[in-house]
Length: 123
Image 1: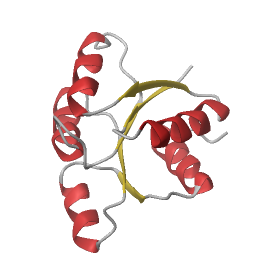
Image 2 (image 1 turned 120 degrees about the horizontal axis):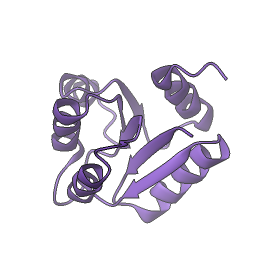
Image 3 (image 1 turned 180 degrees about the vertical axis):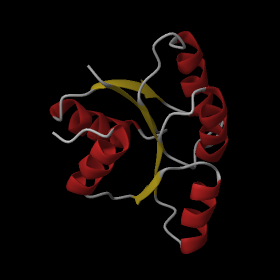
């Protein structure tokens, strides 16, 4: 089963996103900030998730820092999912290594389509 990691400091947003992904048939790992995600990814280094979805504004380690670290250590696709919706924010997120940028509140169909594209999963 394909695994996706969701990183967001909002328990509600994490639950919404995780439920959506599980309903789509994916296994989901959760973390409340970048630092917790980094620790969990180190623990799962032998079998890391196939995709990371991260908020940007979080305590301890923000999504930009996490994205750069993930790209360096695992080179997995990263979706930035954030309320920061200005053109500069999108540009900066992609410059940090993001493969896609989705603003909150997100459209569930758009999220699943983006996940499918990045996982190269046609189903």
